[in-house]
View 1 (cartoon, rainbow, N blue to C red):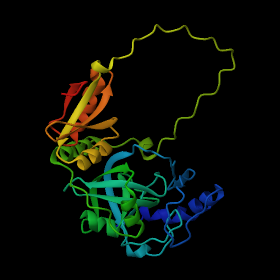
View 2 (view 1 turned 45 degrees about the vertical axis):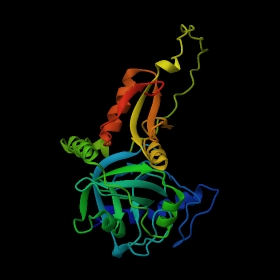
View 3 (view 1 turned 30 degrees about the vertical axis):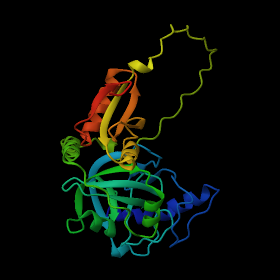
View 4 (view 1 turned 90 degrees about the horizontal axis):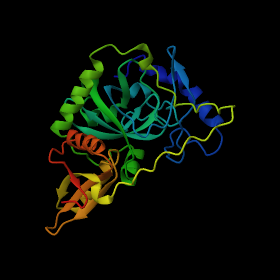
Length: 307
């Protein structure tokens, strides 16, 4: 269940609400009213002597522990002004925008769900997300109280968003394949092998642009022209060949963080999924490793045109 330290989120809720209102523009969902009309990031805040800097991390993907909180917080205001429903499929996170959506995978079982982030917490080292009791039940960790998980930022479709807004689960997702689960558990072991430095508890502030140089700038010498990579020399990663175009297109979307994808039809009625192009073999090899880590062991590098 939610720890006393993670419950400290209630202490900062009022400050976060006031800061959001002071931002101007838009409207805030009133207590008990769910809305995705306005996404709030919020200013830095401090809990237990540590400062957290919310920011819109589109590529958030971390492993750590998940905990959950339930009935004791029923009806209390979350950090974005909604009423907490312990039976809903929601979560608290220290820095992601409110609301936002994440995919949570239990590293013991591979079970994967989508949750809507609408609160702040948890505030104990090692814990990266606080699930509602309903979300913990759906993930299969309610009885455990705490579990090893992967949390990845996603942008679900309209139907899944609508379901989560009503407190219902999004469409069922496939369990993580064994190769991916093995890679995630290895990543978790590496991340927890040694104590994290004190600075790791703080979320890094987005980089600040350097101040302009007061001296007159001198135009750099022109670099020699580099010939463009011919399309026929570009590398692609062929991930899979599927018999259903819809599944192929969904796979392209799921692999969007690795590279630009496309679906190619074949004479045999299959739909080939590939990502690229990559201008050099190193980039292609990196993409190939990521695809295989997600369970697509038959992925391979091909040249254009695909063959």
